[in-house]
Amino acid sequence: MARGNRSKPPGERTEEERERDREEREHHHRLRAHRRDGHGGWFTVTPARIGALLVLALVVALGAVVLARALRSSGARPRPTAIVRVVKVVIPEGENRLQIAEIAKAEGLTGSYRKAAKRSPLLNPTTYGALRGTPDLEGFLFPATYEMDAGAPVSRLVAEQLTAFRERFGHDEIKRAHELHVTPYQLLTVASMVEREAQLPGDRAKIAAVIYNRLRIGMPLGIDATLYYAVEEARGIATDTHELTESQLHIDSPYNTRTRHGLPPTPISNPGMASIEAAAHPAHVPYLYYVAGADGCGEQVFSTTFARFERDAAAYDAAVKKNGGKPPVCKRK
Image (cartoon, rainbow, N blue to C red; front, side, top):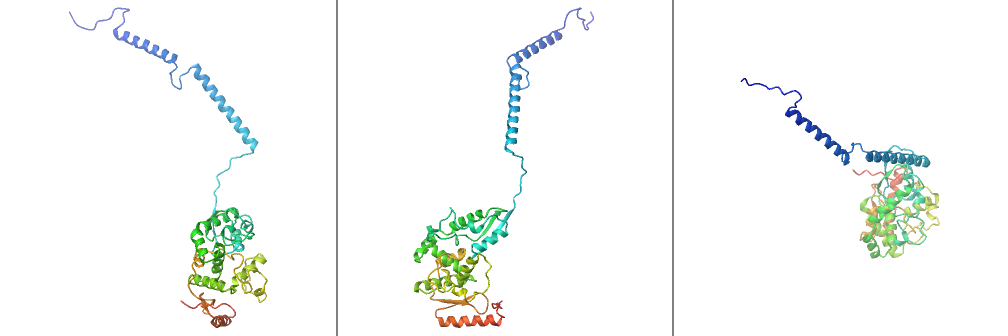
C-alpha cells in the first residue's frame, strides 16, 4: 500500500489546531485575571486609577490658580539674573576718615562714609583704652584692598575694615602696649603719627623712639602732621597739602603738639601693620629730634641735641630755597 499524506476527515481538527485553541483560551483567562486583580501597571485602565488621575489633575489645577493669585497680589515679577560688578577699593596706609570717604565715593559706594565711620557695634574704642565720648573710629579703619560689590553701602566697607583690624591687632599688641606703659589706643595713636611722618620703612622705629623719648621727659612732640589733621578736621576736607601758615602753627587745638604736651586725643590716620609694629617696638636710640634730609631722598636726619637739629633744619631750608621753594629732588640713583 502506498505511503503518503492522509487527509483528515471532514469536521475533524488537527492536534496543532487544538493546541492553538488552548493557548488562546489561557491568554484570555490571564488577561481577565490581570484586570481583576488591579496589577496592570500605570497604564492599565481601571475605575480606581481613573479616579486617582482625575483627583491629581484637580489638585494641580487648583495649585496653579492659588500661585497665580499670590503672584498677582504681591506684584512679583520674574527677574532676570543680574551680573554684579566687583570693584577693588584700595585704602593706602596713613589715610584718615576724610581721605577714605573720598576714595569710597570715587569707587561708587553709597552713603556717607564719615557718618558710617563714627561708631559701629563691631568695635568699641573704649575697650582699647579710648576715653568715653571718643568721636569716631579713626585709627581702627584698617588700610587694605577690599573687594566690594559696585554700589555697596559704605557701612559694609567700614565693617570689613574693623574686622581686618581686629584680626591683626590682638593680644600681642595689647600686651606690648602695657609693657610700654601706654594703652592700646595710645599705641595706635603713636602708630598713626609714625605712618604720616615716615617716608621710608627704615625710619619708622626711630620716629617712634623720638615720640616715646619726648613723652618720657614731658617734651612737646612738635609733630606737624597732627596740625594738618586739626586743620583738615576743622574744614571738613582732606586736600590740605600746602605748607602750614604761621597762624596755623599756633592754633588752639588739642592736636597742636607744638603747644600741647602729650599725645593728641585720637589717632590722626589709620596705620598699617608696619607702623603698628614700629610703635610696639621702637628703636633703642636716644634721639629727640628729626628733620627731612637735605638731599630730598626721603630719609629723616635724627639728632639728640637742639643745636644739631638746627643745623640739619637749616640745611634742608637751604635746599628748598635752591630748588625754587619746592622740596629738594633726590638725585641718588
